[in-house]
Image 1 (cartoon, rainbow, N blue to C red):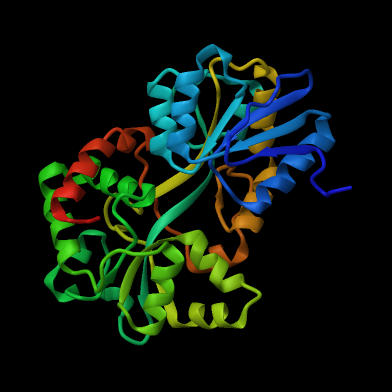
Image 2: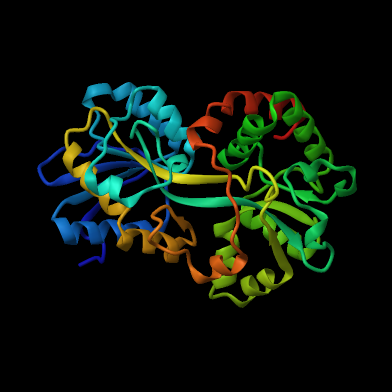
Length: 338
C-alpha cells in the first residue's frame, strides 16, 4: 500500500471530490512533498481522510467563486498572503477560532484579524550576494537595490510573480506609491539580465557571476545548504545573505496560510485540520521538510536557518500590504518589471 494511501489527489482537470463523513477536502496551491506526510499524519491521528484538489491559487479562487454553495472545498491553502486576503475580501472564507488555535499564539501580523485565514509558515524575502564580489555592509535595504552603484548587478524573478508583487506591495505600504515607483524604476535599470526563472535560478546566477545580488526567499537558500547534491552545497558556499531594513521597518516576510471555506460541508473537520497544521508536530515538519519559519512560537526553525542569523521582520499585517497588490502591479508594469 502507498505511504500516502489516506490521501486522495486530483490534479489538472480538478475533478470535484464527493463530500462524505470523516473527510476534509482541500483546494490547494501549495505544492510541496513534505505536506503529504503532514496530511497522512493527520489522518492517522484523527481518522479523517484528506482529499486534495491542486491548482493555481488564482484558478482555485475563481473556482470557489463560480461553484458557490455547491463547492466541495472545505479548506483553502495557498502560498501568498495576497491570495488569502483576496479570498477573504470576496467573502469566500469562514472566520474561525477555537481555544486550540488561540493557544498557539500565532503573531497578529500572520493571521487575519477576524480569523478568516491563519498563517502556517513564513519565508523572508532577502538579498543574496556573491561573497567574493560584495561586502555585506555595502547593501542594507531593499531601497539600496535601486542605487546607481548596483547598475547591471541585480537579479530577480518576474515582476508578475506573487513573491515580487508582495514585496512591491509592502514597499507601497511602507514608502507610498510615488517612492515605490521610483524604486521599481531604479531596480529595473540595475538588472543584470531580464527577469527569468525562479529564486533558485537567481541564486545560481549569483554564484556563477551573472549578477552580484539577487532577491530570493530564505527557504531556497536553506535548500541549497542542506541539499544532497554537492553542486548545490558548492553554490551555498559562494553566497551570503542580507536581511534588509533591519534599522527601520524590518525584513519583508510572506506566508503560506489556510482558511476554512465559507460553504464547507465539513467545517468541523477543516477546523481540526487547521488546528493540526499549527501544532508542534506539523510545524516541525514545515520547518525541517521545507526550510520554512514556523508560525508557532514554540517551534524553532531548522538549525541551518537559525545559522543565517536572527532578524527583525516587518510587523505589518500581511492583509494590509496585500491590499496594495493592484497598485503594485500597475507600478511594475509601467516600470517594465515584467
